[in-house]
Image (cartoon, rainbow, N blue to C red):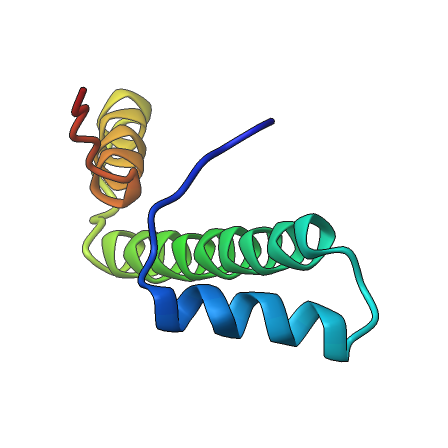
Amino acid sequence: MNLTIDISEQNAAVLEAQPRAAQMPTERYLAQIVERALASKQSRDRDRLERHLDYMASQVTAETTPDEMEAAISDALASVRPQRSWRP
């Protein structure tokens, strides 16, 4: 993936200096930052889903049908999916 970002001159200077200090190509350094941010977000999302499912399971009565459980799982997934706002 190729991407162009606009950042302040100060941040650009930092992003030029840090990869040099780490003796890495700038592109690889930035790719690692993005990869770590995405992994962290996925981990938080998994934790939120787990907590939500635990909460929902605690609310289930013995009379709950399989269809009701499936609907509850769908609700749980919908609650943790990221809200997307598409901008041009």
